[in-house]
Amino acid sequence: MHHVTFPDGHSRPSLGLGTWKIGESARAREAEIAAVRVALELGYRVIDSAEMYGEGGAEEVVGQAVAEAIRAGTLRREELFVVSKVYPHNASRRGVPAACARSLKRLGLEHVDLYLLHWPGSHPLAETVRAFEGLCAQGRIGMAIPKAVREAHLRENLAAAELELDADTVRAIDERFPPPRRRTPLATI
Image (cartoon, rainbow, N blue to C red; front, side, top):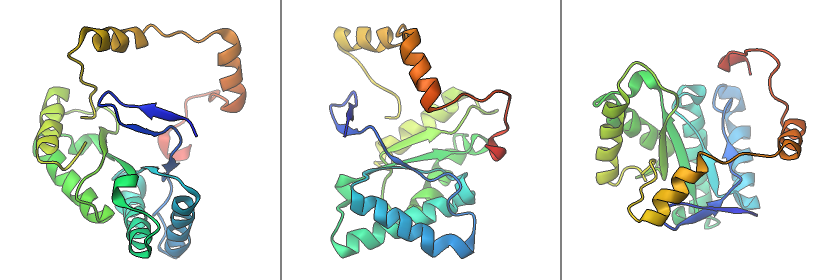
């Protein structure tokens, strides 16, 4: 498995388990928990969720599966990298901590490793970032924003914006993951 190295030096698998469309049906709950458990047993160590997925239901499924795996001794929390996201309408100075607390409760965790703004909304980004910084200082989330102080890292981060893929690479990606042919609302993808 390929790994991604974060600016802080930690390395994580580049492939994770997405949970969009999970947690939407009470009838499917046990099967979804079992599916996440199987993923953990197979070695998935990155799990992506959001308060939006199933209106918190996906986080509940992940939380239950992780708790079961930890109780069974097949997983240690420090082996897992959990990502969650805040709704844009919750991205205010007061809304972010409250949303994060609800996500943590559903996940049954003391912290998430990466907390993201799902997409920009009406709250000023600077306000959202300040709220994220407060959560980070409290140990509730892991610097969703890459930090660099050494010149070499600053140059590397900036150079990433100039990265261009050649036509063969773009074609290969498009074949593997066809781009939409028209605008598609998020809810119907």
